[in-house]
Structure formats: C-alpha cells, structure tokens
Image 1: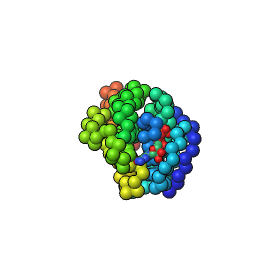
Image 2: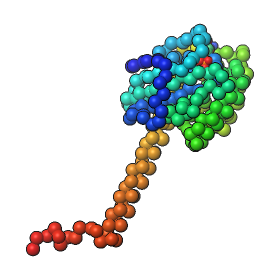
Image 3: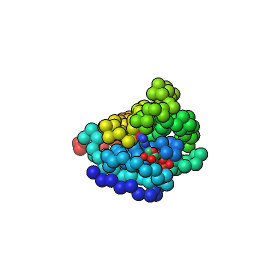
Image 4: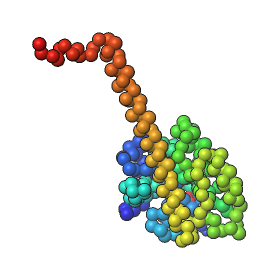
Length: 224
Ligand SMILES: Nc1nc2c(ncn2[C@@H]2O[C@H](COP(=O)(O)OP(=O)(O)OP(=O)(O)O)[C@@H](O)[C@H]2O)c(=O)[nH]1
C-alpha cells in the first residue's frame, strides 16, 4: 500500500496510465472531503478541522484482483466556486460530498455537478453522491430519501456514511471501489468501441483496395 498526500501539481489532460484512476472530491467547506479520503487511505479519522488547500493522495491498492493506482484530489471547499476547470478535465470520476447536517451543502452539489458538466461539455460523467456525517443524526437537515432522490436526478450512485465512525470503514472503502469499477467498465466499453471502429475502418480500406484493383494478384505470386 502506498500513500502520499502532497500539494497538487495538476498535469492537465489525459495522461492516465493504465490502471490509474483519477478521482476528485468536490463539495462545500467542512463537509468531510478530507476526512473521507484520509479514512479510506489510512483508516484513521481526522477530528480537527484544517481547511484544505489542494492535495492529491496517491494510493496503490488491489480492487477485484486489479492492481490499481488511485489519485484522489482533495479540493478546497472554501469560496463560492471552490474548484477550477482543471479539476473537471483532470478527473476520471467525481465524488460529490455534502453533510446531512448542512442543507446548503446539499443544494450546492447539483450546482457543482452542473459546472463539471459545462466544463467537460458532457453530462455523462462517472459520479458518486456521498452524504457524510450520518453519526450526527440529532443535527440532521437532509433526509436519506432526499439524498436518494438527488442521486437519481444527477445519475449518480448514492451512499450515506460517517467518516468519524470506525464501523463505516468498509462502506467508505466500498464507495471508492465501486467508483473504480464504474470507471473500469466505462473504459472497457470505450476501448471496445474504438477497436470496433478501427477494425471496420480496416475492412473499408480493404474493400476500397479491391474495388480500385490494388489487391495483389494471385498470378504475381505463382511461379510458372
Ligand atoms: N461528526 C463528524 N464529523 C466529521 C465527519 N467528517 C468530517 N468531520 C469533521 O468535520 C470537519 C471538516 O472535515 P474536513 O474533512 O476537513 O472537511 P472538508 O470538506 O475537507 O473541508 P474543506 O477543506 O474546508 O473543504 C472536521 O472537524 C472533521 O473532523 C463525520 O462523518 N462526522
């Protein structure tokens, strides 16, 4: 297991090596983006609040017998539009986090996802909606049903967790793993489509050659 949390240097564009999956954590300040990331990678909970600047966590793991390298970008929640266009282009997958104790953070998620779609010029993104802090039930402002409904609208998976509860460690690991599996599936589908396109292009070229009489004749190969 390799773990490295460091300040981010965004290498723009699609430089993802095979087996690398880039995930970006998005959401309002204080919803628990760092706590969830660190809980997954180190199994520890960060109790104190220290606003994030930007960090990328590189984590080597095995998911479904695949050697996987996850790069998890923990963004700064501060500011009205905390994330930059570069995040939306850099990432393969998106985790949208809100806190069940903060209705504003819940409403912001839809806005943030729209911005991601605008930047990527596509509404088909691999995303997960995470409702965090479900240990704080007495302060709940957003119900589970509302979370599920929003996830349906956004076309994302949904899960409600608590980064602070040790017993939620498995659920938090599963949410990252499931996201990786969605990424792998979509990558395989894309590659399958590309293979199909290039083999049909080769077929068309071969037909063109036959039509234009450029195929090597059998006679030229046979010695009399
Ligand atoms: N009770 C409880 N507290 C949590 C949970 N997750 C995070 N916190 C606390 O909430 C505060 C903010 O957590 P962070 O992980 O720093 O939030 P963030 O979204 O990364 O915040 P920014 O860096 O400002 O964007 C910290 O004091 C955490 O300990 C949780 O599931 N339950």
